[in-house]
Length: 68
Image (cartoon, rainbow, N blue to C red; front, side, top):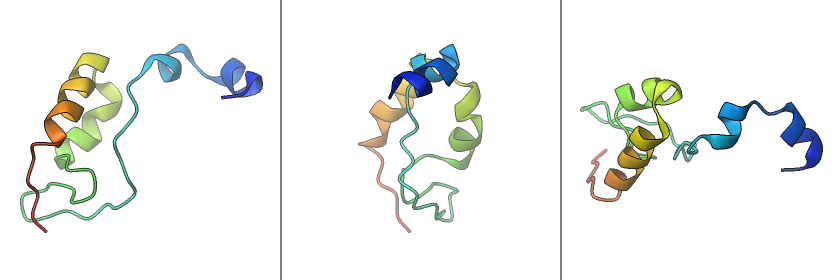
């Protein structure tokens, strides 16, 4: 991030855990994204989650087996 971007960023943007989105937004029959493995509720709620909630979700993603 360059100085201009840093100045224009809000404190929330600088402190938040990044989204695990990989731009493969395809949902299976159980409403899980086959790209990032998050449930549709987790995706829509992401902006409101605390960093600790986001970290917990990200930690859990590797153990999820998501079928198309």
